[in-house]
Image 1: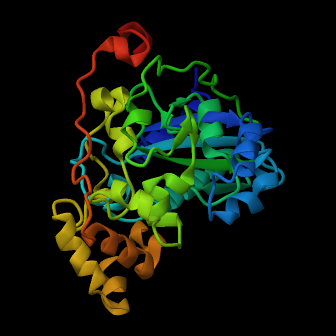
Image 2: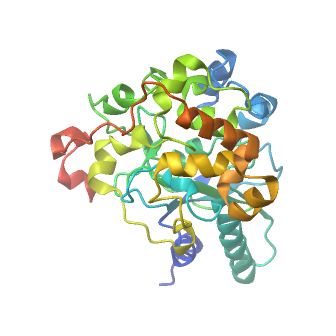
Length: 333
């Protein structure tokens, strides 16, 4: 008996280098009401594009009319790598182009197998709720830190999706949550950015403050920045699912650029403060760190260099046993 198109499609995704793959049927987003409340509360801060695209995010068939299914993929970026002044996701090459190219390659394969197929790849670039689709495709649940957590590899993953105009058989959605009573992520946040479990006020989040925001970092939050120049991994570092299941870095494209992983934060900050545009373009060509622009990186660097009582190290990661993971070994298989 030949394998189904869905099985072969997911096999293509794994063969292309993705770590997990599932299929979801497009339609109304289960989390659109929560997203609307989040926007209404102003938790998105200066990210006006989220509000502009809110109506499209209500239903995943709206951004690209005619699309019916999505191949949803996870790509791990190495949660076992040591912490540092640059969040793990941004130390190597920009993930967007890498994932787009691989998803486009899968679309070309699908056309060879099935004839004319319309499709479009999304990687953080369209008005869709990616976590919603990933959960619908059976790839994980939402942790209390709002991250998608896969029970086998944790949360240090990028989410991508290939929308197609085929009616594919979907995978069972991930219907349960396995955070239990654990609140380590909420308690460890250096700026207390979580309003409640699964509710993040981006205006207080270090990743937002150092990447998305174009404004000065508020004085009352700057102390929590510590030595973090770009992004923050603290809520993921302390998560028991990552403590136990995070993966070593395997994707060569995400190998840290020289000076971004093992460098002293203040040394790197001093370099950034002194950069001109030409040096900036050369140092960060093809890097996700260009998202913050040179002005943003300089702002972050000055905050790191400012003389204040700043915590210089992330909180200690506590050991974890199976009871803290919300289920037993048999459920992980």
